[in-house]
Image 1: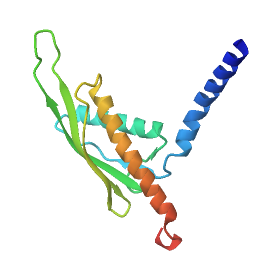
Image 2: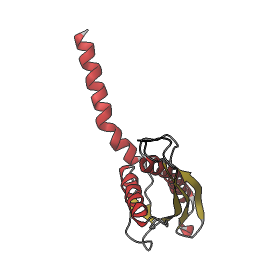
Image 3: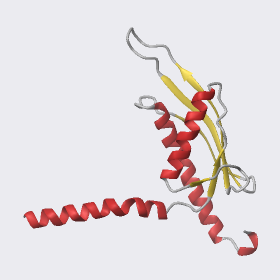
Image 4: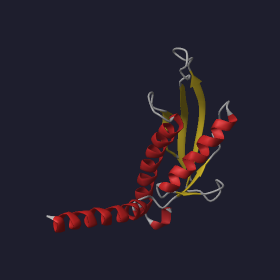
Amino acid sequence: MRKSLRVALLFCCGLLAIAPLSARSQSPHLNLYVQPLQSADADLAKSVREKLIVEFEKRGISVVESGEGADAILSASGLVESTSPTSLGHRPSIRIRAGMRLVNRNGVAIWASDVASARFAVSRTASFVDKAAEGVVAALTLESKRRASEPASQK
């Protein structure tokens, strides 16, 4: 029984070591530019943009510093909604919400969504960033497949 347990543990450890490599190899090979988020709260907008960039890079998306070399550009206009605390000693609830749009290098929208943090999430920014990243990565994957299937004369 010990031998089978050791084999199972080695197998699981091997899968964990391989998983990040396989996830990266399946990500689209397109360059993304993330425009500054438009919001009344400039500090929050900057923080959310940086978190988006980190999340895209974790998911294997190449993020570039300008729109010139980008295959796709992500823009967002958002706001922060806050509510009053429900009782003494409780923090106010904050919800992040933004209209987001992803366009390819030809200016064609390939994804657009109204993204909002989960209502009961522990971290509003993490919830927002995760939802946005899921949509953008899915759209970039489809765009990458579309590009790979088009004739060389159209690329």
